[in-house]
Image (cartoon, rainbow, N blue to C red; front, side):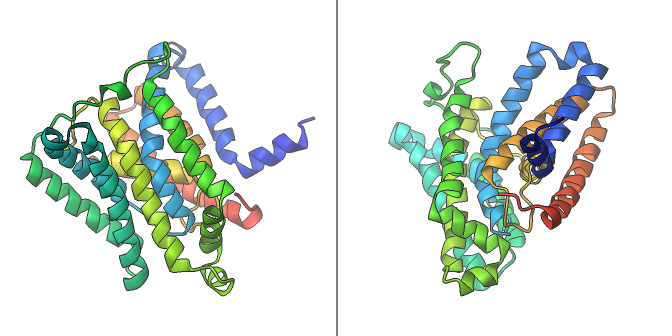
Length: 314
C-alpha cells in the first residue's frame, strides 16, 4: 500500500513520475553510456546552466507573463563586463547586475503601462540586445577574465558553480514561498482582477517580478560565463531561449501563472537534462532531439493546464 502522502505528491508533481520513467528507460536501453560518470557529470553541468537561466523567468511566469530577456542580458552583459574590465577591474561584475535590474524594471514599466504583451516586448528586447552584442563585440567572442574564483574547486568532485548557484536558488524560493511579495505574485497570476480588488497594487508587483527576474539573471550570468568557458556569446542559440521555458513548464509552472515557481523549476530542469542526455546518446538523428524537445514542451503545457483543473499547485 502506497502512503497517501506519496500518492498526493505524485499527483501534484507528475514530473517526478516522468523523471523516474525517463531514468529507468535510458538506464535499460543504454546502461553503459547513460550510467557512466561522464554522463552524470554532463547532466549536472547542464542542470546548473539551465537552472540559473530559468530561476528569474520562473518568477515572472507565476504572474502569468513571460520574460525572454534573460538571454539578451546574458549576452550583452558579458560584452559590457569585457569593455569595463580594463577600467573597473573586478567591480565590472556590478555592470551586469545593473543591466539586469534596469532591464527588468524597464520591461515591467512598459508592460504594465503600455499593456504590451510580455512575450512580444521581451522578445523584441532580446533581439535588440543580440544586435548590440554583435555590434560591440565585432562578432567575436570576448574573454571575461578575472573571476576564476567562481570556478575554483572547493570540494572534490563537486562543481563550485553548483555551490554558487545554491544561494541564488534558495533566495528565489524564499522570496516566492516565505514573503509577502511571493504571496502577491501568486495571487496576481491566479486572478489579476481579484488581486486588484483585494487591494494589491498589481502594476507595482508585476514590475517587481520583472526586476527580480533581471536581478537573478544578472547574478547567474556572471557564474555562467566562467562555467561555460569564460567567454561571451555572440550567436543567439535557440536552445538557450527555449530550454528554460521547457524546464519551467515541465516542472509544473503553467504559462497562465498562479502556481508553481522556482522550487518546481529545479525539478523540471533536472528532468529535462536527464531526458536530453538520454536522447542525445541514443542512435536517433541529431535533428530528432529538437523535435522531441518541442513535443516535450507541448505535452508539458497540456499536462500543466489539465492539472490546474484538478489540483492547486503551489
